[in-house]
Image 1: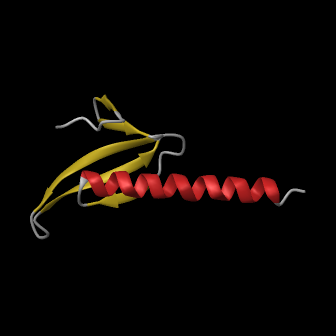
Image 2: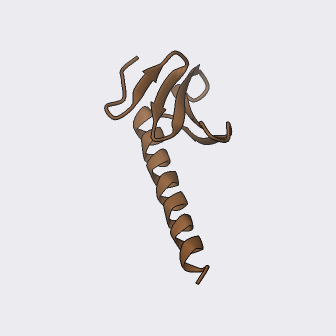
Amino acid sequence: MKRLKSGKYISTGYLYKGYEVRNHGYYPPDRCVYWEAIDVETGQADCHAKTKRGIKALIDEQNAVNQSAAIDATSGAR
């Protein structure tokens, strides 16, 4: 397996921006490898993709949504 440039390799997969990225192996009907991103804090699988690049993009998108929700929550408290 190749290391993500901004991630850290661990025994079960990779850590990338607060998510554990796991390879679920080859899926013959779709002829691809599936990846899953598990939130380290909650233990929930938030993202699934067919490529490592795709899972990184989904994690970045999820983090952007979470940050904008946090900003909306703080501005709405006034």
